[in-house]
Structures are given as C-alpha cells and as structure tokens.
Length: 335
Image (cartoon, rainbow, N blue to C red; front, side):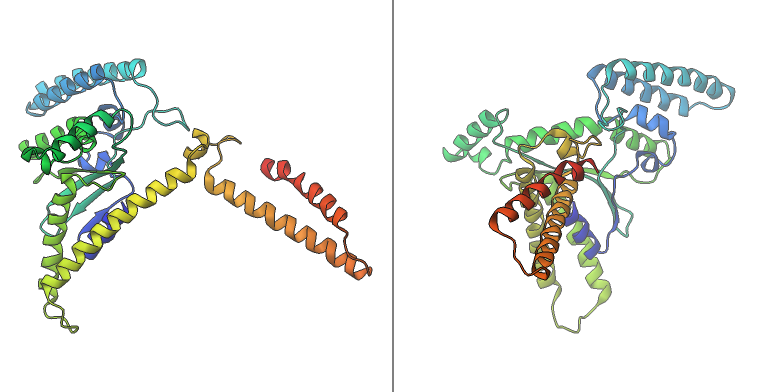
C-alpha cells in the first residue's frame, strides 16, 4: 500500500489511508452501528441475502414522505434489530483480540482534482498454493500450447480473488450506486481490487490504477509548465510509471520476506496477541536485544572488577557467569 500512496502523492492525488471509514464513505446516511451491521468483514450467505433485502427496503423507505416514511422507518428499525440477532447467531467474531465482529473497511481512497475517486483493496495471493495449483497448471499448459485466448490471461488465483473481493464489497457498492440515483451523492467511487501473486503477476486493477495516476500526474506537469531542468513530460511520465511498478514489486518482495521471517511461529505471535506467547515479532526482537545488552554489560563489569583486583577471569568463571546471565531470560520475558 505504501507504493500506491507514494505514487499518488507524487501525482498530486488526494490520499486517504489507514482504513477508509464506511460511515464517512456513505456520507453519514447510516449510523456507525448500522454500517457495522450492514457491511460486516465476514458473513454467511444467509446473512448477506438478508442484508441485501434490508438495503432494498431502505431504498423504498427513502422514497416515501411524511407520516408514511416515519411509520416505515419504525418497521425498518425492527428489521435492523432482527439482523443483529441473525449476526449474533451465524457470524463468527473477526477481531481475535477483542472477540468482536469488525465492519467492512477499505484500505485506501484516491481522489483527483476533478472529483473522480477510486477505492482500493490491495492483496497478494500465493498462486501455487495447494488449492490453486490445478487451475494454474491448466492455465500454464494452455499458454504453452499456444491457445490465443489464454496467452495474456491473468493468473487463475487473481481471477478468483478478484471475484471474491467484488462479492464481499457488492452490498456496499450497490448502496453507493443507490445514493447517486437518489441524489444523495454526485459521483460513485470506482472500486478496484489490486490483486497480485507472490510470483509478481499483477491483476487488471493495477492497469486501471496506472491510467488514473498517469492522467493526474500529466495534469500536474501541465500546470507546472516548463521545468528548469529541461525534462519533458513524456520522459517524466515514463519514469513515473517505471518507478511505480518497481515500488509495487518491491512491496510484494518485502511481504514475502516478512512471511518467511514469521514462518513457524505461533499464530498469536504473527498477529501480535496480548498473551505471553502472543508477543509480536518486534517485541520479541526488542527483548532479545535488551537481554544481550544486559549480558554484555554484566560481563564487562565483572571483567573490570577482576582487572582492578589484579586478576582476570578464567574460562570456567566466564562460563559460570554466562550461565547465571542465561537464568535472566525468564525474568526478562516475565517483565
């Protein structure tokens, strides 16, 4: 995500990161509690179907006026309460720290000076995982045999994950489109799932994002006029696109390195749980460094004292001291 943010800022595009709040995205038409209820991060099919019916009913109520609308809103509130009960029965908690259910939130939103907006959800998938291996093998053979339609087709894992993203955000996108039809909002943001594989294959969403950023950067260059360094717009645009793609591939590689670094550790460690076993990797490294510094400092003090007394530490004494320092490990972990 940092690669997208850096390129967007360079292109002069307004960036909103740190999870795009659904409540603000829908311009406050629903309360925060209702947004969390209508657009959960994870839901069953029965819950999603019930949510769609409730949203359809909400659109019908929005068209009513006067006493008729007030009565319909009271009935709508009862349907919200019924949906809450259904969520309690069918949906599992998605926040492993608090045991609560999270609402749907987007990762980043870009808005250019013309008011056009993109809402993005970047993700990286492992295309050769066991569940995707057969589809990838079939696609590779089709490419090798020269099937024209498959030659430039994206990885099967990208196609599947893109469809999953559209399904997950479908109710939210439908609500945004409904707001435009009812005159609540002027334009509807375009949703782009940025799906890439661990083998650095990029989905179609990246191509659309590149076009959006290049148009914004070109407009910025035109506003700046002639540059004192003599560089022309075509060269700057080409350099911008190359740098953006390079940053995206670096971000994928960095994510892979972090996954390999965390391989074999408990799930609680990778997620930064609150238990003693669930310390994050960063906290674990900090403890190791603190322990090493304490051992070095204690050993140096012992050597200095021995030198002041006119004698050095024998090998056996150093080993005994190190053994006593190793006993500090449980104390450091407990603290």
